[in-house]
Length: 250
Image 1 (cartoon, rainbow, N blue to C red):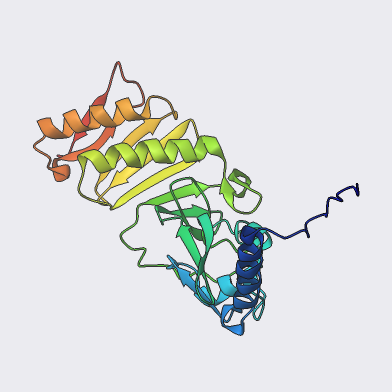
Image 2 (image 1 turned 180 degrees about the vertical axis):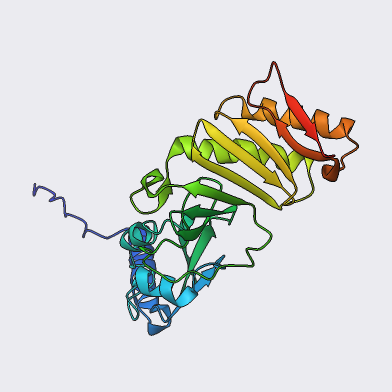
């Protein structure tokens, strides 16, 4: 009796494989269309800096497929600008990249040596002569002023030393809470000899850069007792908190 032979069934690829292959080929061809090639770069959040300068520094590869564009180099180079606090790059399909920035905000005018600079709250010089880009400064006449600073207080051409920045923040920050005026002039050639001029009339001696917030609170109390009328007072001496002094005019 003849033996039955087992015939091997022909191998068939599963239907799911063909579906996957079809989708993969379709996506490959679709995403390779020229419509996805980078042809526009936009900038959001720039007020101090010129958008065209930011686009130039980002140096994104126009004509490259937007899904293949790397943002690492652009983010790194833009992040070197001291005027920027945050930088983000985002794809906007089909062919645009958005550069989104958060700039540092002008906080005060700092007279350093014989030059004037606009600084932010962290003591960054927004218009340093070493800046890589042009800076469009807003109206600065309403900003408080810091004078007497020496060139040595600036580090790496852009940053005021932390101890000076801290004294500026504490003084102005406390004053902004108790006064509506921004016409303030803080003189601090040294950290142990700080003085303040309010509205070009009231002189306040603060002395060392210690307990500045407490000293400003003493100033608030003393001004309240004087009815808030600066013209009656020649100066207030707050160098020693246990013995504040007020000299009235006349």
